[in-house]
Image (cartoon, rainbow, N blue to C red; front, side, top):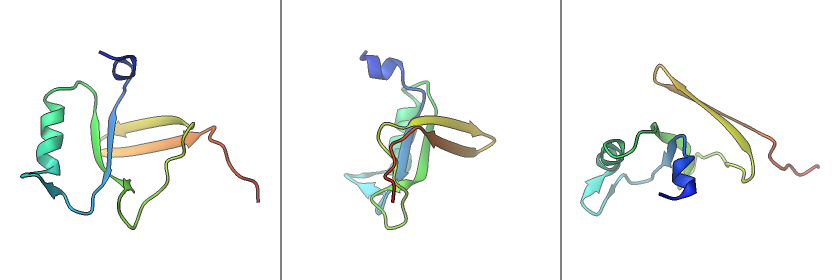
Length: 83
């Protein structure tokens, strides 16, 4: 097991334009992952290859809270460009 897998707290999956590929859909893939990992897998977030997306900054500190079917991702400490 790699160091990055040991320290993983969750798996985040973004939005997809077409959730059918290679004979299985996104829900099937997520179910497969859930049966093999012990961390939460949260899908359908507004990042990825869609028109309506947010940018996740590299180098940011993140806090992820998932409770009662709702998820909140808070980012801080990421570099910003001054206008």
